Every structure is written in structure tokens, then in C-alpha cells.
Image 1 (cartoon, one colour):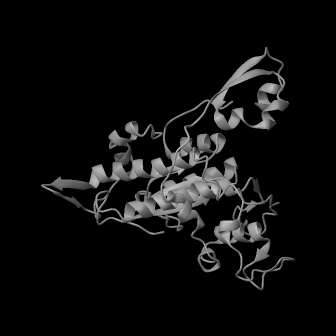
Image 2 (image 1 turned 180 degrees about the vertical axis):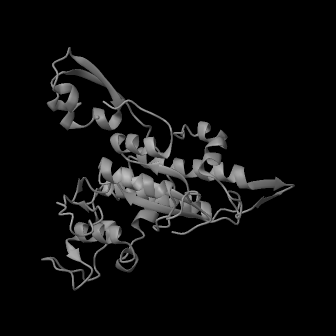
Image 3 (image 1 turned 120 degrees about the horizontal axis):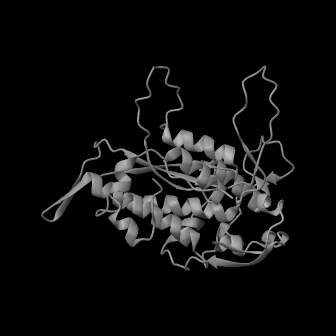
Length: 302
């Protein structure tokens, strides 16, 4: 969605990427994802959209300014995440600059995501000078070493796949507190075939969830959706708002970015707030106006 200031979002909606064998005789096809949609990650992105819509309807936060968003699928792949990072940092216009200098600033003010440590690390090395030593466990397991106590986020500790690494003697995880986001569930359930058809991602989610197809001409064995599909009857992680942890972090991240932009382009005079949407704002200025970020326990990677 277009806006005066744009926020980027990167989530792993899919876990696999199409493997293409290049013959170097034709233009390579763009990177694309494969597999089923992760409905939990879809909920993350919808929480981001929900927060942006709330802010755009607010009369106190960024009045008169419209936030937009660009949300990408990283496929849980480093190569796709790097591609997305360049796209976000180089602006939203997919036209190459043929001049001697790249003078155009990126339009994206900040990025929420990625929803995985490895893609996040690869992105941070492109969109900022911050450096993190990278170690994901398979490399460690190839060299016999003393038993180790692993310290990580809650998603690592609760992942059953970690049990296959026998050299780990135990784990300590840092869990994110459970939260409530008023209005989010109604927003998530406010989907119909007509609304879904406007988004390829939501179309894919809808067709997988109800095992039907929205487009008659699509080559598939699924029957055509007849309009009786009701998302309120769907049991999936997309509709489950009982454990909003990372979803709330996405929600708070959008508000943190909005407050940072507000501090940079808005001024309060008497009882009113005036915002100049024509202010040329660099992404680095957003990270400087981060007083509210520390209150929300969210930090920008510089």
C-alpha cells in the first residue's frame, strides 16, 4: 500500500524456494517460494497491516500523514532475504539507475522482520553496518566438542528438531510475554472471497485452508470455491489469537516506527499537532528519534 512514508516487512510465509537451474541463455526467472503457507507468519503480517491502519485512522499519531507498507516473503532463505534487503534499501522503484552515482534514497523508513534469525542477520549486514557473528548448529555438530548449554529465543528452545543435536546438554530460552491486541481477531476474520482475491498471498492461504480454488481457469484438482467458506469456522494458527507473543512484537514495532517518524516530522503547537508529510526523511533519522522504542523494548539495528 502506498503512503507518505513506507514501512517494510519481511516474513517467512513459505519455507522453501523454487530451485532453478540456469542455462545462461535466457534471462533468469525471479526468485519464487514454494510449499504451503505458514498461517502463523501470515498472522504476523496481518498484525502489521492492522497496526498501520490503526495509525492512519488516528488523529493523535501522525495526523494528516499516511503510512504505507511493502511486505515480502523471505522463504526462510538467505538469498531471498538478501534480495529483499537490496530492494528495500534501494527504494521501491524497480528501475535500475544507469547514471554514475546512486543518489536516490530508499523510500522505506524501517523494516519489521525478518521472522527468523539467519535471514535477519543477512539483511542487517546490508541495511546497516551492524555485524553479528553467525554460528544457526549443523556446523558445530560436525566437529566433536564438549557438551554445551544452548541459550536462545523461545522458538529455538521449543523446536523439537533441536533434539537431533546430541551434543547439546540442555537449553535456556527467553520467552516473550503473552499479550492481547484489542480488535485484531475481528480484523483477521474480516476476510471474504472478494477481499482475498485482491491479494495473491491471501488467495493462496484461502485456497489451501478451504481446499478450493477462487479462479476457475487455474489448473488444479480443487473444486471452485462456492462462497459458503467461512473463515470464522477455520481452526488454524492464523485465527488463533490466544497466544499473541511475536505477533504483538510486530504490532509494537510498527507503532515504534510510527512514533519515531512522528517525532521527526510533527510539531505540537498549543493543543494541536501539525505534521509535514513533505519532509524529506532519511531512514537513519528514524532510528535517532527512538525515545519511545526503549519504552516498548524494541531496538533498531543500525
